[in-house]
Amino acid sequence: MRIVLHEGVSGLGNRGDLVEVADGYARNFLIPQGKAQQATTGVEAQAEAMRKSWQLKNTKDREAAEEVAKVLVARSIKIPARAGAGGKLFGSVTSADIVTAITEQTEVELDRKMLHLSGGIRTIGSHIVTAQPHPDVQFPVTIEVIEA
Image 1 (tube, helix red, strand yellow):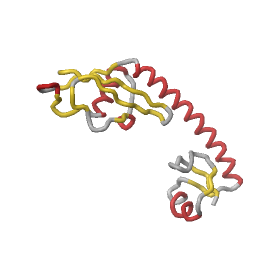
Image 2: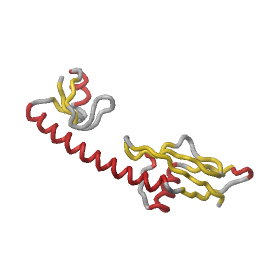
Image 3: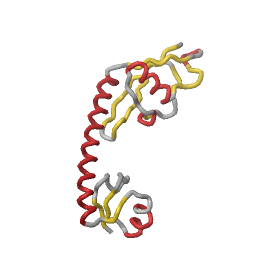
Image 4: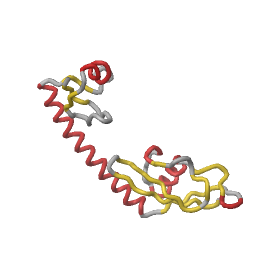
């Protein structure tokens, strides 16, 4: 069945794409959840408009993410934390703590889900955290954990 996607579906396509899928997948999953619509002549014209608007929005979002990257790559974000002997922290520095520190020190708004941090930071010192505010933009953020 030929369908038009109303939103991006992983492994299938982006908003406004015309794709061919199995009839059951379209009827039982994509169409009932509002993620797609069966393709007709009028719908295909709407799909072209959706595709253009999605590309414009995607370009603007990517440019904004690149600006954020320029600001954050050049800076080192300092986070004070209580530590014991040997530089081990009481607890850990989480992605929420990092986002709060970034907002306070650079006035850049990030979502904690944009940071890729396995576990938490548990020692004093310099750490590299990967940020990905856009699927095409990924950059390192230097986090400096200092003793409070």
